[in-house]
Amino acid sequence: MAQVTILREEIPIPEGIDVTVDKAVTVKGSKGTLTRNFNNKSIQIKVEDEKVVVEARFPKKKDKAMLGTIRSHIRNMIIGLTDGFTYNMKIVYAHFPMTVKTAGNKITIENFLGERHPRSSKIVGDVKVQIKGDEVIVSGINKEHVGQTMANMEQATKIKGRDPRVFQDGIYLVSKE
Image (cartoon, rainbow, N blue to C red; front, side, top):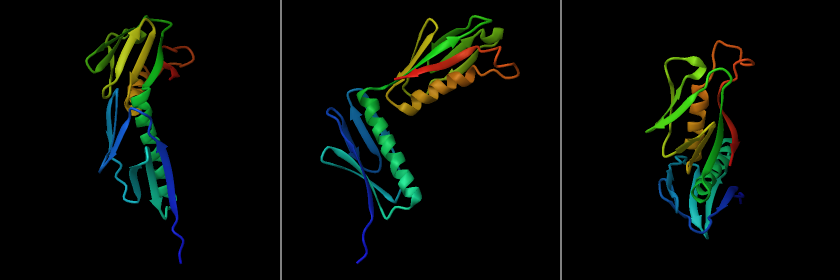
């Protein structure tokens, strides 16, 4: 008789968090709701005994990798709804004082390297951006949206055509919480 190989990962569900699985995985908590569709036929996701179980039968190498990826995404959804994600950034300038403002879902960076036209970056999803002096705090419940908003600000202040050792102006990531 052939042995059935099952690869199984379990994610504990903390108190105050509700996880439902149909075609998509929905995680609800006190901070909001996150939904994500994992469209993979070889991996099954289910909830049993206060745990989210992700398993694959007869996994190939790509199935094993996808299993770990799905597990990490679900874990990040749970962490986002319990603690949230916060990235601290710093506004650095040596030559021209920069002005950073938020308006709606855009961040406007004025007087970057003395440029006349302001640069802008997009705030992705439901992310809060706070500007206090030369510090920028990006926070939210979806890790991907928080990280993409932070990356958009870094990319908006990327310097091209000048020596990066001399022109170190920009908005840079300092710490993640």
